[in-house]
Length: 267
Image (cartoon, rainbow, N blue to C red; front, side):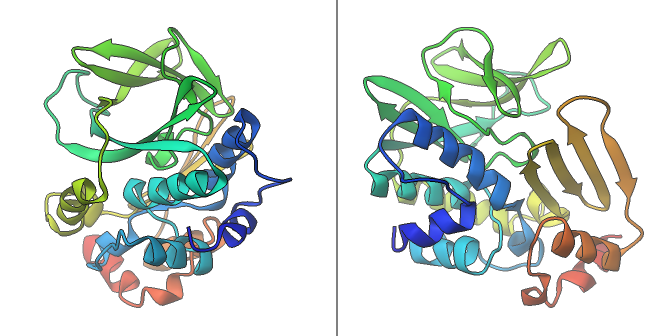
């Protein structure tokens, strides 16, 4: 990482980072609270660079957000700079599908080894992004600051599930095969350029708050509190979307001059 201090300021890290569980937990909480998940480059037809300097410039210096390939690149490199042992992994997204559904490896996540234990970290799964780490070898529910998750084996892979009421729903599967940077390039390119990709068809933005999760899906603006019923609002048009992006998510929409027109085209 080129500027760890700038990254720590961006996410509001408190104290001195150390190679310990408290630092790992604080990083995985504060990054998705400070930096939005967003697909605005793909939605407006712009390339998404996975060069570390470009990702730092976008997410740290320009106060944009990003998706899993960017978020977990940034988090992984910050952890390595601090001294953690980090392995990049790839996942198959099965959200809204059967747990064993056939799916490509279009998700990036991290395995962090600390004091002989393996933890899963993931700062880039949109509206269900983890705000804590999961013990790779634990059975049953694991509590994070924003909900309960669990890991269970499905064939040769591990399935991450989240708890919704009394039901466990699938998010993604992964194995422990280490990935190289080039392994993510093809999936990143496909999600940016494929007309069938849901990232090119509608705005998808989310960010964590202490009290819950805020999501923007197209023109649907939602708040999912830690307790209680979700609050939903249909935004009236492109100007309302831009106002929410700027005001609620802190995204500098002025650097995306075609965004309003693109929103109007899919309204």
